[in-house]
Length: 125
Image (cartoon, rainbow, N blue to C red):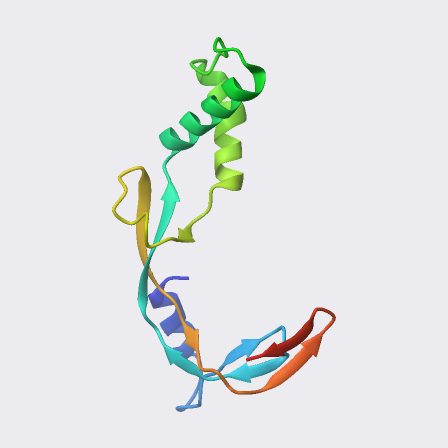
């Protein structure tokens, strides 16, 4: 969500109410602690295509796969890239030129010191 849209949503509230984050796992609210900027990275398509080529060569043990066919790349590999390659936090890749970079703000919640549980076990938030 863009900052302007968040501000517009908050401006719809009348007065000056407290704002909390909803923790859907614990079904409870938590306070907002901070909104730091972080850098997200995402592998560029060219690097992803190189990985797909290498995996294909390794599995099939043949080096004549037709990866230069533009229709194959657009119809098969590009949808796989779109589906599986996502933005992620990885501080080690920020300086790597094979990755797209995007600076975003994230909303951090304060630890409330409460304990809840679900089928997976105890949850402290």
